[in-house]
Length: 296
Ligand SMILES: *Cc1c(COP(=O)(O)O)cnc(C)c1O
Image 1 (tube, protein in one colour):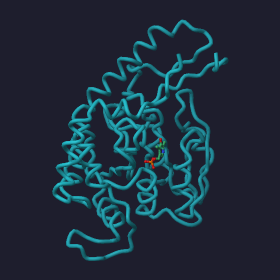
Image 2: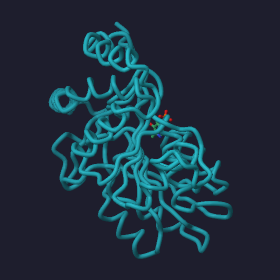
Image 3: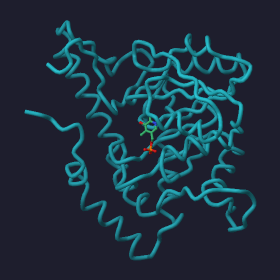
Image 4: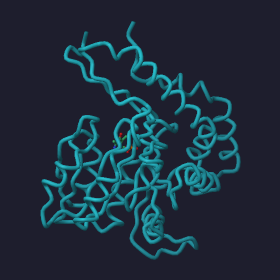
């Protein structure tokens, strides 16, 4: 039996009625662009993660690119990231005219802080750790390095909504953190969507301007911006789905625990860390094992 990596219709079927009701509620009002549901969803994620600000954007890649731009990363800057990430992490840096500098990962497949320290140059501006597979890096070590060397940290937490290190949520450690709402992500919508989280008031204000053509709350254009808003209908669906999110994380963690209990005896297999691994709270976007004879 071949198990599909992801089954989109099955996911939708699990919350079909609630999603449809939410979608219709927005559509019947003609509420499409930055309407109530967007703010309500941002608030819900704020409460869940403890982030001071949450800004909905059109997709995760835009969120990362806008956060880098708002942080002032630009031409001539170098940005350190893990080699084991999605291409979008590097693209977000590239389109800010900065240079991605790739470094090795540690045993848990996340950026290795010692390797990151080794490639810092006078041009290094930022570190973008990817919280891959729903696991948060040792952010104590990473933030200590960044602070010691005067570097900005912006997290690619695309896969890590609700993941924690020492009780703090992924995406809330650095100047900003991005979450992807792509359909196959932990909390996926019916298309593209993303969030940027930040504890910095000025950063949040810049992000809100950047995502909406530089327009402020009064609709006045006060800066250059782009069009990268989280759609209201997507936010409506996400709000409906979000009620089940804590339960889904617990289910993933229970399955990871079961894999660990039952597969630990196989010599050929190197399993990801278990759910109760030191200060880490993993949410298992993916269960990424290593095997010498993978296809078998
Ligand atoms: C999904 C993903 C992205 C891109 O997010 P989109 O919402 O698809 O733009 C970036 N980085 C990582 C690690 C991802 O998993």
